[in-house]
Length: 241
Image (spheres, helix red, strand yellow):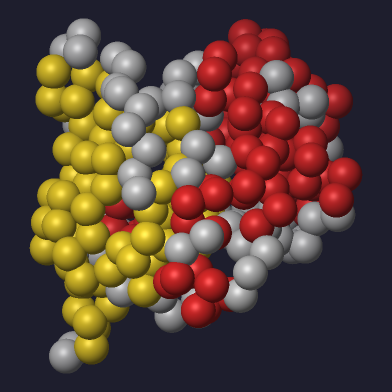
């Protein structure tokens, strides 16, 4: 049921990823073809291997299989990854948004002396995410939506080949979710981003996703949202929507 959209200038191939914890199989021969300029949403019940697959892609765990990135301009090369975690513990942190983000694009400690060039460049990048006014705010005082926008900005400095989002809008209200999905829809087009996201927001997945991948240790269904939501595997697990 896979959507046969052709690749543009780049693509990511996830080949036969398997992972065991002791004798327990967590991932079983997972293969995916991720096109640039597309939103690919991973769904599945608890324990299906969603977060483990993200950790494998990020290189956080040893696994069987390979992950290849191919570009028409420069062939196969190392992939540039961006990542937004489900949660980030910034409680009581004294850092400002500038301190946290600026440290990624400066060779000297930004919290000692403010670098005007870095400050301006960062503010311009934050502006794309509607977060330029937060640059001097302490990260510990940001709302959930504000922190999410800041983390999205940091994850795209510079713009990656593949952006990985682990349930990035958990607990966000309807308006916040609409803004988020509109934002990533714009990003994938403007910057030809390939995006992999774990989510359970079926209403928004149906509206915005290009491809849905349903995991249960292995890929049990994949294709367009309509195709996957109509599949026996989805209905047996989640019911009709």
